[in-house]
Length: 264
Image 1 (cartoon, helix red, strand yellow):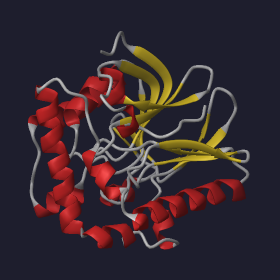
Image 2 (cartoon, one colour):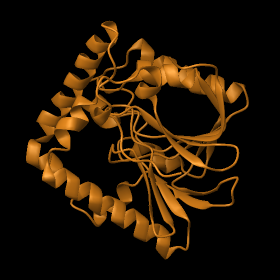
Image 3 (tube, one colour):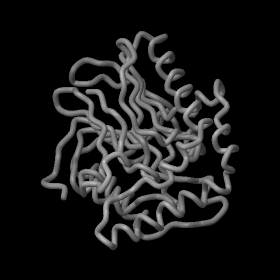
């Protein structure tokens, strides 16, 4: 099990999807209660307005997530919110600060090691990519229910004391169209950062947690709290880590079911 609270310089969380039945709010709460950070970046799709438009869903645990973020602010954390495509309505307030939350369209983050990273949700790359290729291949309706099935099965596994298993991700990424989209998204993000002479970019959006380096440019994807339950963390010395929270809580029976390679 996770131990004492860990202090980070920065935390990056994306694709929480509060208001969606697939949101793994319980796991996120356990993570937020075990860590703190000087700055917490909320990198888009924090509230799933698209899902809420179909069906209002807001259980107590989703309120608890917001309360936990507020508690981090009370203890001194800076909160920066970068709206995504599922909470795009909030983009009209970009550049403003509401209470304790700064709202930005994107921003440049400099690490303690002096590396400069562009932080953005990533949906702007959809204009260059066919975002819905993989979803069309399995059907948006089918995918929504797959995410719900993922939540149901893992709630049952938790009650049985078994490790979290990203079922939705395992099935989704059997699709060659999904893999091509991820590869193209990654390449586009890397090119975007390289063209601006940056050390890399930090994104979310595609629900695929990853850290890799192409030449001198880093690509970092925070992942999500629907399928994978991951976060990106910057340590005091500036090095970056992809946190696979379910694996921190329990040791998976089959480690091959868990995450991808990480590069510091």
